[in-house]
Image (cartoon, rainbow, N blue to C red; front, top):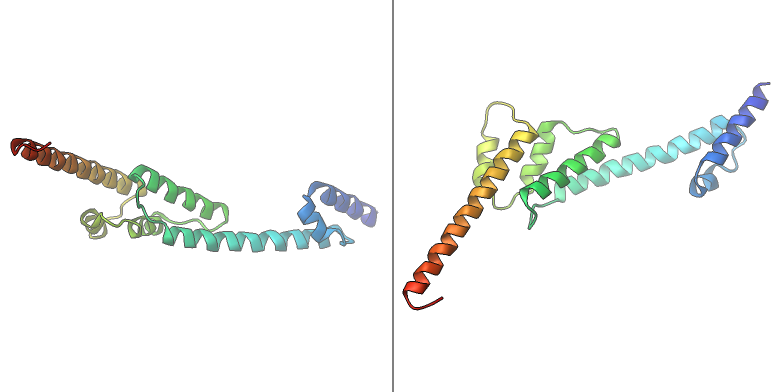
Length: 155
């Protein structure tokens, strides 16, 4: 009886997997043997995914992205970590986010120097405010330069 049930489970497993996985487990004679191979394959893939995602978190830079795009990308990578069974806490994600900011030193310093805990949402809000302030200053500076040039006969 036990062998008959095991063979039914094995047949179900073999008919349920993709061709790539089937090629790895086709020689299995028991459901437990097939399951061990499948588990080892996915465990290895999960570890690799976790390592690659951590590398991506450490190397992602804001660059030309807006704060919204950048923080969204970092949250997406944090979600991948969660799916791989290695979730990040807010402090770790904030560290990765702040590390990727090139021209945000004043706000990064203010966030890092806080003595109380801060959430990813609060960091996002502060970065967004800083970005908007910098855009306003750039627009005002550009407008001042244009007005000065016009007064001198330039455009």
